[in-house]
Every structure is written in structure tokens, then in C-alpha cells.
Length: 173
Figure 1 (tube, rainbow, N blue to C red):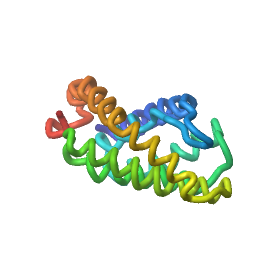
Figure 2 (figure 1 turned 120 degrees about the vertical axis):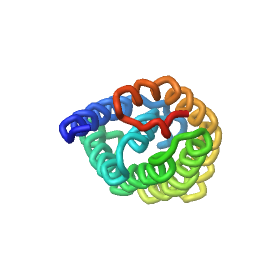
Figure 3 (figure 1 turned 45 degrees about the vertical axis):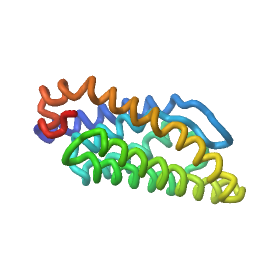
Figure 4 (figure 1 turned 60 degrees about the vertical axis):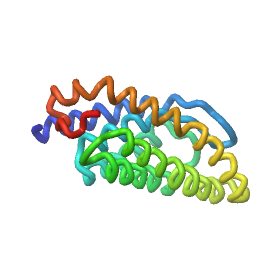
């Protein structure tokens, strides 16, 4: 794929992800259910880790400045980059149900629960365990649904991605 096509594709994904970030389901205090992980996981599958990490960094900044949902905090940008690093680690060479489960589990538990609770504590001055307890319940409850949703979504689009030369056959489920 040419560099121009890559840049255009990244820009399209970024636009879709920014639009998706407008839509969320509020759960508790500052806990929300987002659907942007679909795009992040696709980016990790299609692009090399370096490009994916830069994408996560810039997408987080652009999304915040277009539609801020709270105070700006570099911790959330770090969260986006670390999430992408995990998705890239598990999904860049091969995609299967086991790798999807591992990637989503690590992101939900390590990044969303542990780091997200720390960022909330720093920003909103409540006890870490207060945020941790709410976050772990939300992330554990959503984990199987998020895994299933992405698995089914990827099964639907993988042939199209292969036909367009965006993935290799070893990334087919």
C-alpha cells in the first residue's frame, strides 16, 4: 500500500474514531462505555506498531480538542498509547480468538481498571479504591461482550480487508 493510501486510511479511521468518541453510555461518575476500541484494534491489526502508537497519540489529542468530556490530562493520552501497544503486541502478527481475548483482557484490566482508576483519583480527589471498585465491575461485566462484539465484527469485515490488501491471510479468523 502506498504512503498516500496509508495516510488517507489512517485519517478516515481517525475521523470514524473521533465520531465514535462522541457516543458513549454513562455508567458511573466518570465511567463510560465507549465503542472506539473497534477502531483501535483494527489499526493494530492493519498497521505496524510504530504507526499504531503515533495514531493513538494524535487521535486522543484531536478527539479531546474537538469534543472534550472533562479536563485535559496527559494520563488519558498515555492510556490510549498503552492500549494500542497491547493491541499491537497481540494482534499485529496473527488474529485469532485467543489473541483477541488476551488483548482485550489486558487492556480492560491493566489499562482501564488500574490506570483509569489512578487517573480518576488524581483528577477527582476520591480514594483509589472508590474508582477501582466501580471500574473493575464495569470492565469485567463488559469484557465478554466486547470480545464477542469485536470477534463478530472482525469476522464480517476480514474478507474485505484481505481483498483490499490491508491484511495478510494469516490475519483471517
